[in-house]
Image (cartoon, rainbow, N blue to C red):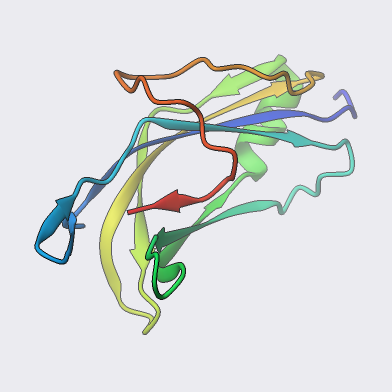
Length: 140
């Protein structure tokens, strides 16, 4: 097994049972098909996990925490290091609300490429034509 790091690509495809936000009578549609790329060092532990916090952007109150989900990465990292790269099928992950209840799910695709470094790219998955965001936050 190669002991070098790699890159993890995370594709946020959609959410289920999350409604579009309404602010002052105007509907704001959530944006999906966002791709995030993280460089993982060779010291990444086998028990690594990706925690995704779902936030609502509010100009007056600041960012509002809506919920979160956790994706365990041990399998994809191990297989990716053995095979050179590994891509998972899209999978749904439950969203945990601040009170601990489960409400809705988020659909995510993962790809791990061993011995690779992050490069700046504007590649987009899906039909989205917007400019990439500068931060690694997802807003509803």
